[in-house]
Length: 495
View 1 (cartoon, rainbow, N blue to C red):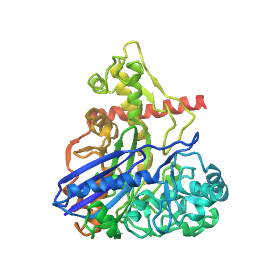
View 2 (view 1 turned 60 degrees about the horizontal axis):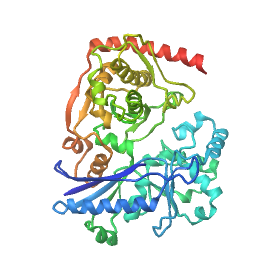
View 3 (view 1 turned 90 degrees about the vertical axis):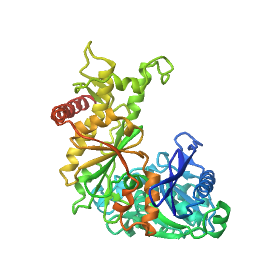
View 4 (view 1 turned 135 degrees about the vertical axis):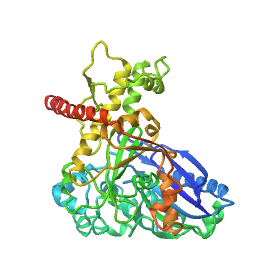
């Protein structure tokens, strides 16, 4: 039998078809890009992406002809929603979280309820990027569209709805709305009352992994898929990435290294959630029952690319400078003793620092470009190590990391992470886990496997485990503490 995992991102969508015995039957990616109708606006053409998804599903039907697809689940980025009618009409574009519209509504919510009380209901730090500010903007600035909309559906849920499911909202995506009660696993009556939003515009909650429908006869015929293919609720892409990377128990974590680095720890919900609020961290449901996760993220690969482009004359290598692989070969064996402040652009959670600057501290005339390059790698790890130390005091443990993303293929960078954190880093054969996680969830939801351990056993194959050098770890502990003091000193003089 075949299982399909679909991942919808802000810059493209991907289908992964697998067989239940652990084989990959095929994968395909179609890019897309946000539109910017006005300065500060960012939105996706919902109809265009739906057509791209149908093309991907037609491809999947072809590669699963000998192993017919029995189930599909969908992973997607959070926050953004698609307005749809009761008759499955797409009514408009999807406003992205990075869009400037809606700030007045998030600001108003901050005035109505203090952060501590809000976090007890919906453990997020209120900002304009979430669903509520965008839909409130539509309500007050495009009442015609708002009136015609039967439901605002997050992208993973929208895809299954268009395929034949009744409207629903995955719980991990509902948490990205600012209208969800995490502990009750349902919409919050209080937050709907405070915001004045119409609860009928949002579909009922479905847990990740629950069966939400069967593909419609019409679309099964159009796409060439089995008429009994079941549709399984998916969720937020970071949650599916955790499943697809094997982060399925408390103490495990994903370290996704790309343009940004995102560390996603998995844990059981603690009684007192306020310490995480004070650190600026969110909490949301995993796609697996009784598990939760959070996100710690900041610049990563973008800094290495910046450094490489500066050396090459700004042309990404066209100026005759070294490429990334060459720079990796030049890094020294021992810790550099340099400190790069990775604040070249605004940071992510938990600091959300937007009023700093970057810099490399400790350089001498003997400093090489390999030293500087490794210093960037080290200091990105220092940034996360500092947060991990603080979070660990609140009972969230980090026993192992699985590396994903493009940076997860760099053994030198993973070795630096392992040495700084003092924890092993696993390098999987498949470093893009969201689509795989969706495929695994499709199988879990339809009873192909009894539990997540059995599901990941055949798919999450580890290429190598990078163990920490404990001598270097002790050196890095001292350097990490010096990094913290340097950052605090520079920041106090900068702002």
